Image (tube, rainbow, N blue to C red):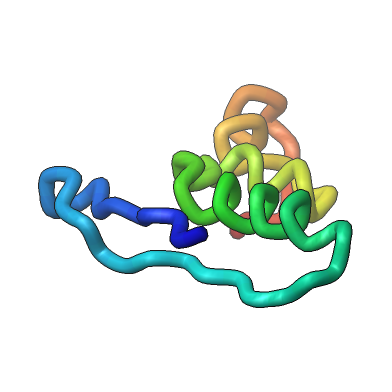
Amino acid sequence: MPWAVYSRKFGGSLMYFMIHATDHPVAPGLMSRAYNKAVSPPETHEQLALDMGVTPIADKNAAGGTSTEI
């Protein structure tokens, strides 16, 4: 079953289809996870910084201390 992926940048036009061909029983769940990741909104800089264990840039100015910038 093809999963359609649409462009956010170009007004929702069809960009490509994701297709996963296998007979493994866990494959539908893996495909669903991959599709959701492909079509989810991009992560913000703050979310990426939290995932990496880095203090977000916005917090640096509020706390008055130093932090690692991304």
